Image (tube, rainbow over all chains, first blue to last red; front, side):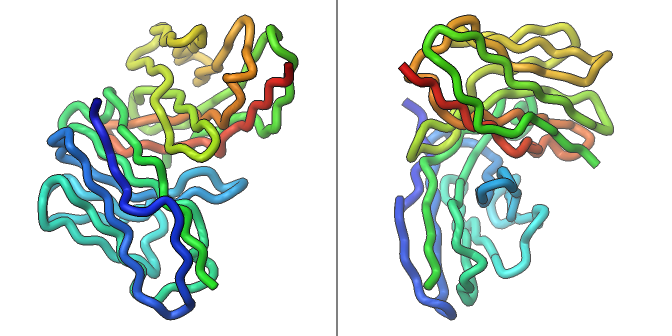
Length: 115
Length: 113
């Protein structure tokens, strides 16, 4: 069964900490995405990547960065965590050319609490 | 830009009731349309999709028809079960926007026995 695996289901971090959220997919997908999910706001795109070592800003990139050194791994980095970054973070991946109509595969999510 | 609007929840139903969740969209191009489902404590799963006008996506008893004239993709199920309790997201993917998914706000559905 194809999978997108997020390293942690729950995380609690302190304000100002540097936080790494890891995502690994085993489907040889070209595209990878990071979303955050908040009540009443749905899913909002933070960053995405169409290839190794490339990244593009999504709709809400402020306060975040990403790294994609290998095709299967896409990391989201909170440089200095703040309480307004408390959220559910969802990683997703898709094929490159056909991702638009084949849809994405999502991980189970990481619920991050910043205290 | 692209946007997806879906009815706000929560929607509370009794088992075996008929479910409809409305979804309308705005897109610059000619999008593909999706419904995703999120069960408690889990990530999103693709429920069904449609890639062109008048296509009907279906899965697990759920159906949705791509209506270009009304820019809609309403989700329906004839007889819901308690196990259908979840959050449902309508989404679109538009080649003009780099094939990124744009999501609606989600609709929570609670089915009571």
